[in-house]
Image (cartoon, rainbow, N blue to C red):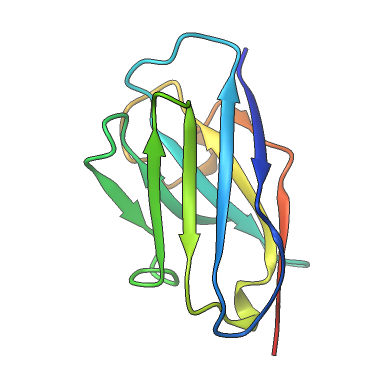
Length: 124
């Protein structure tokens, strides 16, 4: 079992920045991809970003490329999502996800464990 705890969400004005964190615990981690998804009210869950075990490979959803940066610190079992130049359309619940696989998955079904989510609200 893997437990994921997100933090760092909140209310920010348009143009501002937030950094989300996701701390993982519960098992020995090795060669696992970790990602972020988001879900806005009335919309489907959307892929945001994924990072490889080493942190050397990343992949982003089209809507956040150049705006968000994903990274990880394996010594802390933590993955981060730096979000810059935030827009009202970035408002959503953001979920951290852990995959037992190592590829840069973009589909939610490739992830085996999920955090409880953290709310990000961007005001105009």
